[in-house]
Length: 149
Picture (cartoon, one colour):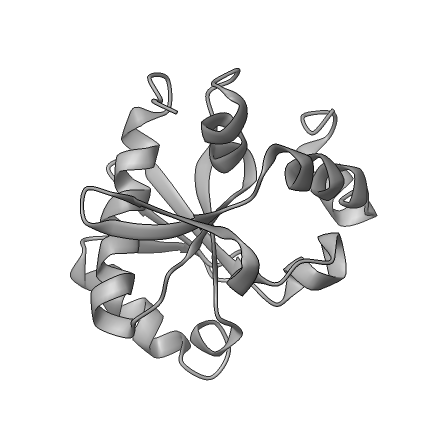
């Protein structure tokens, strides 16, 4: 689905996804509000592009991820949240191993899309519904408030 309100953030995601594809052979998962807007249609301007990647690139190979993002002109915004910023667009990484715990699906089983040379995985509308119903923990409520509702 085409994005208008969030086109800049989605284009930023595609830029990162394409380099992840080529440099690390990663097909990242487009996640969070940006992914939901793409799947069900735009309904809100989002804050960032949430991206799920293999755990090793956040844990053991974090320096490789940091170097990749720096090479694209991003600056580390928040180490705890694994957030980077460039031209006002934020990309936040998280581990893809959380998916089976949250919605009972492995990243490998998600649909793969390809746009402008970038390959990425996407959740279905039903998977997003299950995800947002599951993400009611205190940390998320404190960070997002009622936005998830």
